[in-house]
Image (cartoon, rainbow, N blue to C red; front, side):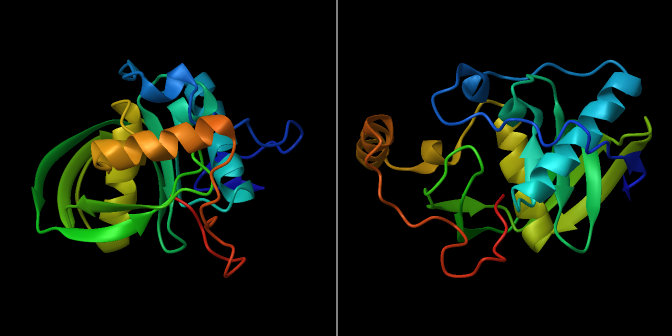
Length: 187
């Protein structure tokens, strides 16, 4: 099976998603010097994992690798991002976001509606493009992961502390994304 030009080897199955509390999720990721065979295999495995988890984005720290790589698939567009830079952002809107690494938690996050970005793709080509709407939101969410920022960091301190305490106790009872509609995909 191929996906955006990458061969997905399902022999190994999806990668393990790191969950809130794993130090890898709060560590800033390192830049990639060049995209080679190892990085392409990682990208393919990340696509497979994202699809298996019904996600729309997945960053390398979420699978335990602190490198500046993430994958995106909104259903309309799919691509790999290496060493991203945000050139300019405009507009803003608040929307509910979830995260594969923080199950059952949804947070209202204010993000730019439009972003001009640069990154290297999985074939070592430099890309400069304008992203809007959902694509911009997913890009910014995954970019945050590379900076060690989680959606919980957008909460007011008291609310964040309360939710973190409940998560650590294993007693958080928030609604899981997809509970109302099995086709919902997570960022």
